[in-house]
Structures are given as structure tokens and as C-alpha cells.
Amino acid sequence: MKLYKYDADKSCQEIFEQGFSYLPSIKKLIDQNNILDDALAEIGSKTYSTDNAAHLKLMDLMNLEPLFERVFNKATKDLKVNINKSDRYFVARKVNPGQSSEKYRGHFDSHLLTIVLPIRIPIARDGLVERGELKAAPNARKFPKYEIINIFQKAYWKKYASEEGFSFLSKKTRVLTEYFDDYRPLAFFGTTTLHGNNYVSEKAESRLTFLCHLYDPSPKYGVGALMRKIRGR
Image (cartoon, rainbow, N blue to C red; front, side):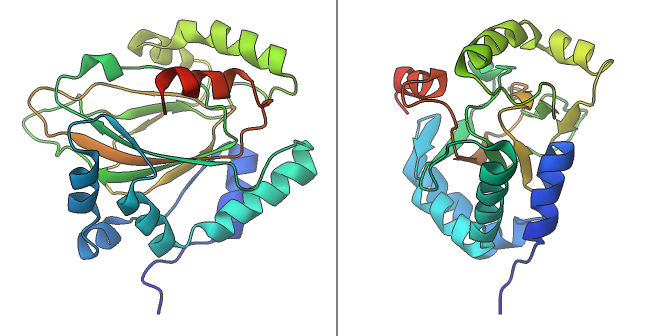
């Protein structure tokens, strides 16, 4: 009997209609399968780790393949994009207290589908506000059909890559502020959702999330592939 259930059809529909969808909480899966300890042991002192074994294990426990399949099929049919079903990029991201370099690096993802899996979220206490919360503006832009448009738009939207920028955007469009205290994963249309995280306060614990990125429609030598090569991940 599966311990985790979600509606893949509903989630896919919400992603394409409103730009995002929440999945049920994964807290029990994390606790019962030693996901946190295994992930921390592998990532060590690094900020990023690709294809973390605990990450792959959790996706299997969640049975995310049906959602991956539905998003792929709908994207190829409705958006007419040329994507590879095996194009998957899985990253574990650990942010330490006071690591300001990770603050509000607002951007659009190169991949169509992004899923944030919260693994360890700093506890809210004593009025603690800065806990690495995610700011996300679903459907902030339309899907860019051409790579040259994608490049120029990514550069243009960088002006909102700050706390003030997201605050300004919230007056014009929907901006989610997600702490992930309930451990519900957030799936969203990565190429059209401007998103970035606040920093983690020095008074908080480190924050760990797993990021699932799937289906980059850009050319082989597009901006997404170039940026990943520069970052070395």
C-alpha cells in the first residue's frame, strides 16, 4: 500500500492553468525513511548537490513519474515544444544561517517544470522572519517561444531580483510567500514563474530543499545550459 497519494491529473492541470500546484505534505515520508540525515551526509558542507541519493529515493516514494509524464505530454501537445523526456536535473540545496549570497536571487528557470521538496525548514520562533522563504510570481511572463526573447526577458526581469522588487510585483500580480512549514511540495511552471528565496537568519537552523527541474526547451547551447555549465552543476 502506497503511503503517499496525490492527484497527478489535477496537479498537471493546475500547473498549466494557474502556474502552480501544491502536493500533499511529505513530512511523514521524510521522517519515516531517514531522508534528512541521508541527504545531509551526502551534501556535507556544500550548498548544492546533484542527484543526491536521498532525493532520488524520495521522488520514488512519492511516485512522481505520473506527474512528470503528464506535464511532458501536455507541454509537447499544447505548447508544441521540442523537449527530451530524459532531460531531468535534480539538485539538493542547503542554505546555512546568514548565507546572504543566496538571498533573493530572483530568476526564471530554464526547465518547464520545477518542484520544490522541503526537507528541513527552520522553525518559526521568537519572531523569526527570515527563514529562507520562497517568493514566487506564477505566470509573471508568458512562455517565451524563441530563445532570443527568453534571453532578453531574463535580463529585463532581473530588476525585480530583490525584496523590494518582489514587493513591487505583488501590487501588480500574484506573489506567493511560501515558508513550507507544512512540508507541502510546490510544483510550478519554471519558465514563467519568477522566483527567489530570502536568506536564512543567523538565529535559525540551516534550510534544505530538493529541487526537481524537468524539460528544458532551450537549444542545446541555450542560456540555461550555459548557466548550469558556468555554475558547474
